[in-house]
Amino acid sequence: MDVAKVKPSSQVKNGMVLDKFHEDLKDSTDKQNKVKINEFKSPSFYLPPISKVSSVLGFITNQKQFIDIFEATYDTPLNISRTSKYAFFKQGVGLRTANKIINWLKLLPVPFESMFPKRVLAKSIRAAQAKSNAAHWLPAIHNFKEGSKHAGHADLDEFSPLLNFIEQRCNTEVNLMLEVKKELKAGKIKPNDIITATKFQQSLWANSPNISPSIIIKLSEFIEFNQQNKQLNEQQKLTFIESYCYLSFDFYLEAITHYEIGCLMCYGTNKDKIENELGMVTKAINAYSRQENIKTCFAGLLEEFKCVLSEANENEGYRKLASCIEIDESEPSEFGESLGDKQYNQLKDWRNGQNLPSGEKLTVFLQNLDEYANTSSGLVTFIMCKTVMAMDKLIDEFIEQSQNDNCNQADAEIIIRKVLSKVPNYYRANLKKELEKTEPAT
Image (cartoon, rainbow, N blue to C red; front, side, top):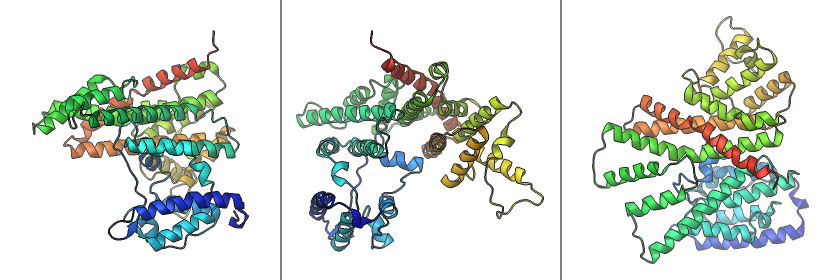
């Protein structure tokens, strides 16, 4: 995009927004005379940081990538060092470097004013005062909707259930945390009080059908034991880890099923299947949780892809699925290994969570799969794959954390499979709510 074509009115508006941003930056100068973008992140299970969700999906893994995206999109390089680009979001940069960044932003035809309108900014500030991750989620949702409108997708039908779910969580958490803050200030409740904390958490999760009050009570008991320096026996430790697992995966299971339901209701043509069958991602996660031979959620999804091929031709299996993988012939291989063997071995690696495909290789695989199946899935199957890969990352993180808490891997895997086996419950409950919304009023 030619930055010279930016409309003067847009430049003026951007200039006003960025000048205010610049002044706020200068006001935040630290003792070393440096400024930086502070990223607040609350360790909330109910509404995890957007940066965590983006990172686990493999989209934006660090804030410096925002600069990279702007540079590439608008073909306008920011002439500061790579180290400074990272430092702007971490250690801080000097005012001279900050000036360069602001002047560079003013060159870009980015509608900053419409990205952060007063209404959204006010909500974000209120969320920040509550110390809620909604401070970042709310502007992101707004900008996603605006970007979709500009791209000609104003209805957002497939994303509506997901966005509504996240907005509901934002509003619930912010309202409740501000109420608690008010009561703390008035002296009605005491900080670090276990009973108060338990009541708060139970109120927060009250409308989450898959999180029972007993889960919150068990966690509260653990915190109390920890404060009293009491040692947990083996069963108490496993009970705590299970409760922790339910809370840490709840947001992701809710988000995944809301999005998948949105896609099926938007693109599905068989009403009976939509209303009575689970979605492919839900099936994939469920397969991992219940079948010992399915080692990862991605393997569960590849199994679903294979089943789709088998519906068209009962003789099709993993060999046919593997034939859609593009192989770099220059890569070393065992002597006498055929192309088909290379593809099959690559698929086996994927199913075992090894040598996973890059975004580019995954795209080619899915395009070849579409071509063979004579269909066009667009971004849907790509997002499916990224979603189950993200779940596998979260599973690995959970197991690693559990081992740090002196829980062996076998016990951690039993716990996580038990928790993820609830995904059909999430799917059916959310599908019921969405179908009720579409029913005509009587």
